[in-house]
Image 1: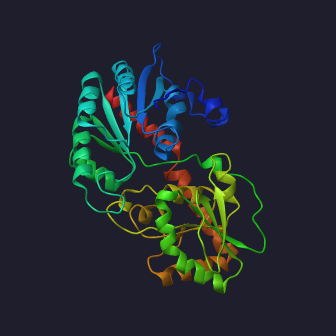
Image 2: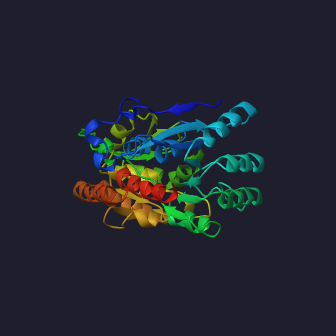
Image 3: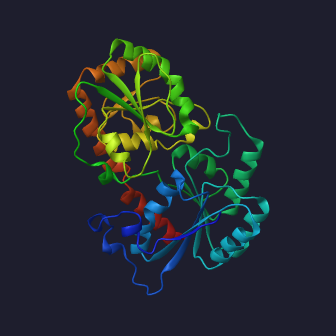
Length: 357
């Protein structure tokens, strides 16, 4: 189903507070707002939320009218996209590659097209090469006027096909996670946030976590997702993800974990869960895969762990040292504020739009 999302008032529809809005100095003096159309696979997609909707207030204050259409198959839906694209100043395709015919039609009616992505969509999700995905990626890169990439690995891949690539890291609202909560006493809660598609990464780490819980019965694992896992020693707490409850569930935890293998697919990941942990003031233990190595400063905001021994050692240190957890958590939140806040990324996006329009 194709849905037209025009956020005329993001303050109410997206829960933004007036005191958290971008500065009015960003506003344009033009009486006629320019239009930017975002096309994605769906409103509930993480890419749509974090790389489109979150920037609507900043775009509006800078003189843009932001719209969103969900793309799906069917001539009626595609016709609506083409009609809207014809009247847009800039069209942004979020993560989704289009069929050759529809991409040509969209190119013919659009003034400027930007492709935005935060995953290695040119390979399979298991890290193996895919000729079909590579062809779709190449076709899209060469059809667009510019590309917004979520990390340097993705930017390098796009840069081989398009001469106008900007690095726009996936960013978050740090203030959303700045809440006062009481953490559970008598337990140390690990937390993992994700979805069924990344379940396999947590499954691979479970034997080490289960063995660790055998030595530390106070250890528990909070799984914020759409599944639970069977364990022998580790007490798991499955939490159904919700946007409203996400921040509190993270803040009431003690340690954020991000296990992940290193391959051609995972190098395209943009460390969203790590940024969320750090924004919530949690120390992080993560695999040194892809952008994780850049986001996590080993020994300062958390620890990088590649082997089972490293995972056990770092987690044991954090389990037994509340002051260490606090210090790393404070450093992590500071890093998010400085380098991964959505206001900083919005400024980069607006500069690029001025260049394009």
